[in-house]
Length: 288
Image 1 (cartoon, rainbow, N blue to C red):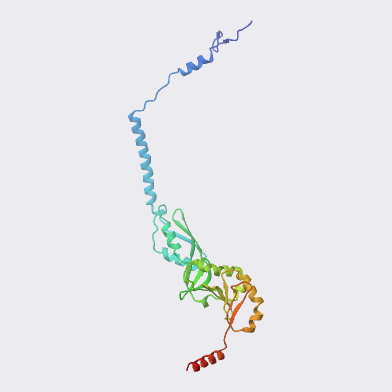
Image 2: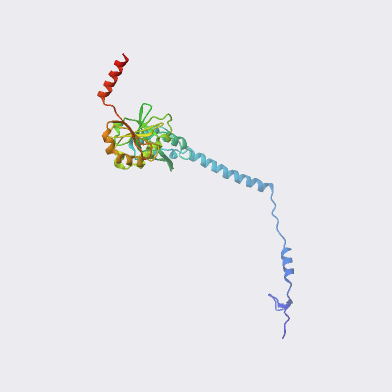
């Protein structure tokens, strides 16, 4: 028996019926009744009260946490390799109430600790429930500085750490700054010199002087003769000085040795004391 393609069996009955086009079925789906949800003032009031309750709960929780005594800062842990600096920080925080750890502002305390001359880098961190962690990197002394009649211990950045005396730190280089400005740029020449020379030569330095227009002037231990080096090429000039030292020894004692010009050395011999006294006596007699 032949069956037409547009005749399909009904799902619930054995009768055959023609298949309905797909467009008719979509149209009936679109025509299904939709239930509309009406938003009444009661719904709006309920949503408003719900949000108010949530915000009120958060507010009460926040007020409870910032007033809870167990969250007050009660312990301060300081990590610092310098015991003297650590003691100064303890004295700075002694008897101070830092308050609740959640709302405690750490920036003012960081600035106060950073203001200590020996404190280089300061990191403050909160640790719940009631601990404040402080990590401090101390400054390292790099030289003894003589400036304006005062003697200071300084670090590599030129920060004045504390007053001292040259004899208290014989292992550090002695820098005499006679320039009119007190900017760290005037110390860059001294750091450049110390970087160029080797360790053995650095230990033999008696002092380093910075002045205008001479630039860098140095003297070695056991030798009072100043060596004027200028503003650059310190290593080459010192090497040339050692090459000509045998010739210079023939004219010692010397008032100074000038090495500011490359491959040139200028020096001024000191006048013997006897000759100086004779010359002054003769000058007085001629004047009389």
